[in-house]
Image (tube, rainbow, N blue to C red; front, side, top):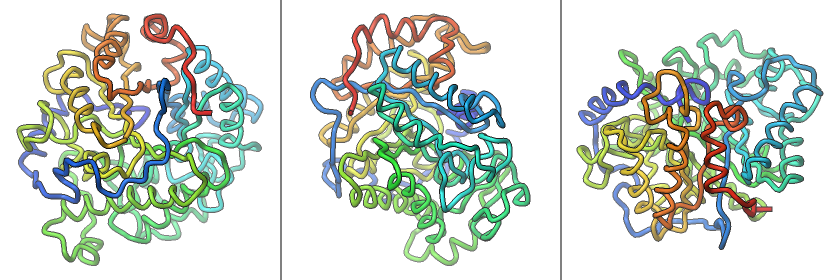
Length: 425
């Protein structure tokens, strides 16, 4: 989704190219599942999108109030009304799915026994908002014919580095050895088995409580690289790194354990709960790996220690939504290069492919000329339609779906969504 706002918004493109060079130098092929091409693996197919069903989604971000709520501390009735307005907008735009961020910073938008109420609701972490946002969202989305995908960030603890600012009794305060400060934020350490166990239990609580249609992870696993800083997981590496050729391989294995573990837990609950991930749009560059894309950008495999291609080829997830947040013809990461790459990646796997679209860039100040054209996004859908593996699109994010500053979303609806699409309910 990005690196300012939704996850901060995808960093400026020049920074992507610079990071790519560093990633290339450090690249080491051979992580778990790397290069697998048979699409077999240990899949857990439960439900695909089905004949005639197109995915039309929008992300609804709560971190720092990016989309919702409009301000912390609003009365419960006002918070509820704002949430319902976003759902109404999704239905009016003829979408059929809302991806609601319910665990933005090791906290919760439901009464969790594991983690405190999110401060983005009340302004104070741990304070009861007086209602149940996730429970309400599930019921009201389904009443409108919308799927509700519960979006979790597995490891981000805070958008600051001060443990004392967390709610008393917060698991990170009780277990400071779980936490790594990095880049001005706090993260749980993915290399600790007890951390992976805990975050899965915390996320699964929402699945057990509510009829969510899917569990959705975003692009943050190990954090994006920050210049001149290192993610200090030395102790965890010393304790748990045995058997791995290097730390990068171990980190990717840790991320695999999280993804595969969630897949197995979801398989054990009621049928029909899907598992989707929306990774950064580049797995590896072809200059690093012949299986990669003709791009020059951050690589999830090398920079975030996330082997996104293996998760698809091994069938560990039900759908993938790569964040293809670039315009057609953008040389470092061309939309028209990446859509075919992802289409080929999912081919034969049974994993559904939806494309993450950068609606937030349409008409935004400082964006290149392509994004000032209201038709750019609609042309994305035209191009993607040439690839039968593409089963739909998801738009970042809800604010722009509603405000639609230059009419790009209205153009998409007029050109592609003339009729209501069947949802999963």
